[in-house]
Length: 408
Ligand SMILES: Cc1cc2nc3c(=O)[nH]c(=O)nc-3n(C[C@H](O)[C@H](O)[C@H](O)COP(=O)(O)OP(=O)(O)OC[C@H]3O[C@@H](n4cnc5c(N)ncnc54)[C@H](O)[C@@H]3O)c2cc1C
Image (cartoon, rainbow, N blue to C red; front, side, top):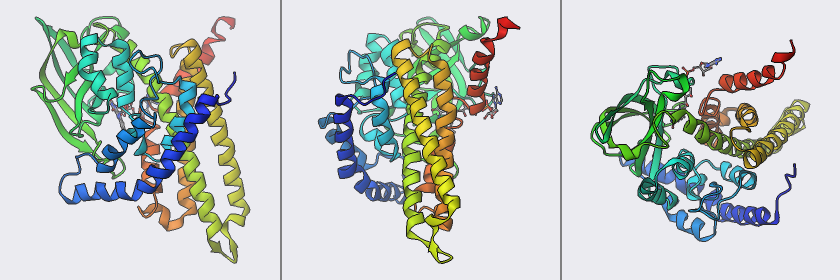
């Protein structure tokens, strides 16, 4: 395995870092001021101007849709291995991914549509998503059942002539509160009596379809994540044409596996960016404060912590690159162990890095004068989104045990 950055990736990294230094890092204050202004005006659920302003610049700089591999529609899309170091850089500032049209859940949804939708659906929804004109949501998790086991899902998809009728209550549907969210990918059971992994289907539902109601936004550790939001959404007798079915009835699980692989590794790549930023903030703070007569950074306990984080971040990066390499070379399905491993490791490293950085900042680390509290809220969700740690550990253990099953 060769993880050295190719000249193409080096050039893109340089361009991306230049863009971050020119527009994103100096724009952070403006981003938060505009977010606050929306809240003060009584409507946090509207786009933030700086993002819309920067999107055309990013596109012009050739830093657009880099996440999508092997698509006729996006010839500039990179392999997972090529994209990893770029996604990590975007991860250093949570709001920046959208500027490059590389943010969740749109990336996973675009990849799903690109792979599994009809040409008609692609023209209607994928093309405007790739243009950054609209946003999307993925509605799988349900409040009533343990959704980390997707076979539990109870929502129904029933055929009625040339339509499907959808019923179900979802929550944690990210992005549903954004007025630009024009399309939902809905997972439900179309064949409840079929084999366990062939009961589910996925259907495309345009926002505004009668019966689709966004009920309420949910907070993440107190943050509303506006204008993106994570919402409880009701689907009540929602009718969509049969052509909105992705791939075919009973193939929802198959799509979920295909969709969640790339989504998961993108989260991990961004988590590395979070960990790097936390470590940097921590080192700078420790070096700039004096306690008990010497810089806090000179206390050996902090040397231990800094060294430990540096080792863990670099190990997590290597594992991420290996998972990306495997996805590119043997496919997402065969790379499932590596994807599960990195999904356990990278969020934990990011959480621990931010936790340590908060400790290093003392009381300051708890408030919004520093970005750490928000970074922690984001990083902590990664231990749940796209499957909780335990489920990934269980998948890794099953594969490991399976290697020895026949020998006992
Ligand atoms: C910020 C955020 C954004 C999200 N965005 C989306 C989205 O856009 N679309 C969407 O559909 N969902 C989304 N989710 C939901 C997320 O994917 C689920 O919360 C997650 O899959 C867990 O499902 P659950 O909440 O039903 O937990 P449950 O299934 O009830 O599980 C609860 C806990 O049980 C434990 N557990 C479960 N299985 C096992 C096991 N095999 N062994 C040991 N312990 C186990 C774990 O600790 C787990 O956390 C989001 C969640 C958050 C927090």
